[in-house]
Length: 225
Image (cartoon, rainbow, N blue to C red):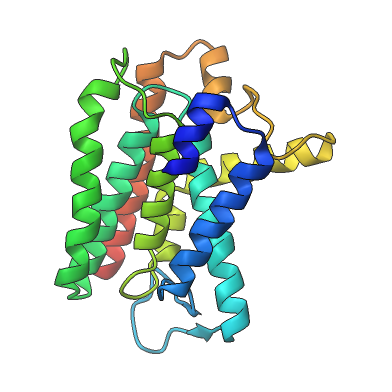
């Protein structure tokens, strides 16, 4: 949150932002937020495979995961209401997953995040009266990324719910690196920018992304019923 406020005020270069993201992710790992195993989100029985990670790899992978989550939501915050709504949907899905696993105390945390997002959304939906800036988007990315790990790894669930934004982020970073640019160099090549250029309205883009996240979340829920 602090580095986001400073970035909103001073427009920091990528280096300090990335260093702060690494520090935040390292704090989460030090506090026990760690992906030490990977399971299939569509698992139907105990016979499904479970891959355990060695500690060094689990810590490194978790830092990569949290930093990736922060940047995915930060990149997503390019259209009014998009980041807050998608994170709110993802938080509800994570809460439902916790409920299905019987993790009632863990379930409260993503529900609180969903409530914050949904309370902010009326002021942020197009045409927005308030924007979240880097301060809000980095916090939401950190929160949803760590909550996907808390109480048992649900990272695979979040991967599916945020499927479109994650693919867009990976594609954009890859394209920037291939062209010799910094992966954190801002431009208007994200999916929502391309859809705007094609003539879609901000509301159409946002509702479409909401629908994709809900559809993937519904499939996850069906797999666990």
